[in-house]
Structure formats: structure tokens, C-alpha cells
Length: 275
Ligand SMILES: NC(=O)c1ccc[n+]([C@@H]2O[C@H](COP(=O)([O-])OP(=O)(O)OC[C@H]3O[C@@H](n4cnc5c(N)ncnc54)[C@H](OP(=O)(O)O)[C@@H]3O)[C@@H](O)[C@H]2O)c1
Image 1 (tube, helix red, strand yellow):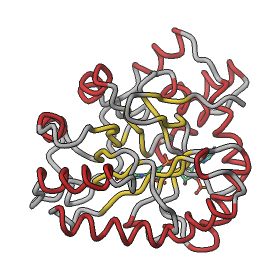
Image 2 (cartoon, helix red, strand yellow):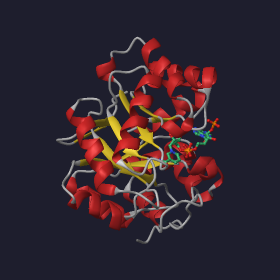
Image 3 (cartoon, helix red, strand yellow):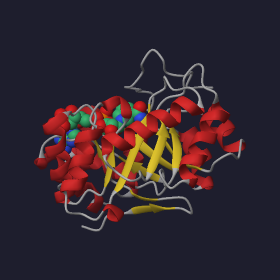
Image 4 (tube, protein in one colour):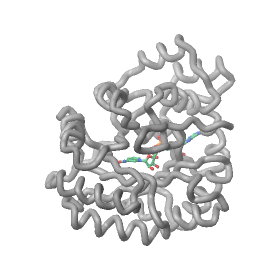
């Protein structure tokens, strides 16, 4: 299997990664070890997931050189300024038991976010080599524009919910020409795609599965990465198979015609997405 890679001046991200929320402890470590054994090289975690120690232990036990793995973590939104952000990230690195992460994201914009202060902390961590690249998650377009326009640190990645039922075209139109990778979370719509007749039809045509079709739809967009979570090795392997699936124009048109307003992650602290 040859893994497609997103490559910019700022980062080099395997485009099919592995999500780890809400796995915990030994089960999480086993799942990540299995994923790496099957060929995943991009692992997504966060301070809030409570599994960084397990994820780091899996990386260290994998036998794969650290330089061949891509690790993302995120600092939770209750750290709205640079000082608390840096302190939290230093604790992430300790739990991960890693010398650095490949990507450090602001997990959600806090209502009290001091954007410039957090960006300055990210810039300093990047200069120190503790975070090879930085970015943001769950930022609406207006806030992302502000982060980029501040020119404090180059934004390598925007991580947001994106799948066949939520297209994020406004964000894609902004990030794609700027070489900012859009990492899709909840990329298989938490498995909802399995029951979709249109997706089932496309899958049958290719001898694939609906989940593979959902992932191939995202991977067909060159500036997009996806981080599906799957506990079992069988599902992890199935999802990797999406890399080989080539959807044709008719498939992509049918998928484009599906509803695109189905947001599945909408916590009370979420920003105004239209902002
Ligand atoms: N930045 C953020 O705010 C944010 C928010 C949400 C998620 N994320 C990240 O994105 C990752 C993925 O998102 P997600 O976990 O919400 O959603 P997801 O990856 O779309 O869906 C995960 C669910 O789909 C199931 N599934 C996966 N592959 C399958 C397959 N081949 N066949 C059948 N079912 C399958 C999983 O089953 P099993 O239960 O068997 O594993 C799990 O129940 C998270 O793990 C996390 O790392 C980030």
C-alpha cells in the first residue's frame, strides 16, 4: 500500500491517519500498535482524550522510527492564553513520552481566546522544535483568517468535521490555495454511511465497502486528510483499503448530491460556524 501524503513547506502529513478518541488505556495502546503494524503512520490524539500516555507508549513500542511517524496532539480550550497553552503542551509531551510532536493544534476556540498570545506560544514551541508544525481545529472561517493574517506563526493545518454529509466548501476554498491541509475528523460520519443506499450502491460497483467510499471521497480532494477511528484490526485494515479506491466522476457527483448540512459534533462551547 502506498500512502498518499500531503506535502507543504510546513508539514508532510500522511493523508489517511488514525483517530484515537475515545479509546483509553491498554485498549487504546493495543489499537494504535495494531494500526501502526498495519501501515498507519499518522496518529491523532489530544490532551482532552486522556489517552496520550497510551498513544505514546504505542509509538515507542511500534518499532517504527519516530521520524517515520506523524503525531498530532491538541491543547484543550480551557487554556485561552499563551502561558497556559505552553504549560499544557509541555504536560502533553511528558505524557506522550516523545521529544516532539509533528503537529500541535488549538483544539477549539475558547470564548475567552487570546488569539495572538496563543499563536505566540505556538511560534515559540515551533522554534524550539517541540512542535514541528502548528495549526488550529474547529475554527470558523473568520477566526482562521485572523490567525493567518496575524502572521505570528504559519498555520499548517485546519482540523474540522468533514465527511460526505458536511462539505466544508467555504473552508476548503480558503485553505486549499494557501497550502493549509484540511484534516477531516468524524470522516466516516461515525459509521452512518454504512446504511446509506447511494453509498452502498457506489461501494457495490467497486467491490468496496461504504466506509471505504466515504474515505475515498475525502481522499479524492488533494488538500484533505482523514483520521477515522476504528478499534478492531479488521476495521483498521478495511479503512486503509480506501487508499486504493478510485471513485469516478459519476460516483463523485452522486456523493456531492447527498445532504451537506449534517454536523455531528456540536458541543455547547462550539463557535458560531458561520462567523
Ligand atoms: N478536533 C476535534 O474536535 C475532533 C472531534 C472529533 C473527532 N476528532 C478526531 O477524529 C477521529 C475520528 O472521528 P470520530 O471517531 O468522531 O468518527 P469516525 O472516525 O467518523 O467514526 C468512528 C466510528 O465509526 C466506526 N467505524 C470506523 N471504521 C469502520 C468500519 N470500517 N466499519 C464500520 N464501522 C467503522 C468506529 O467503530 P469502532 O467503534 O469499532 O471503532 C467508530 O464507532 C477521532 O478519533 C479523533 O481523533 C477530533
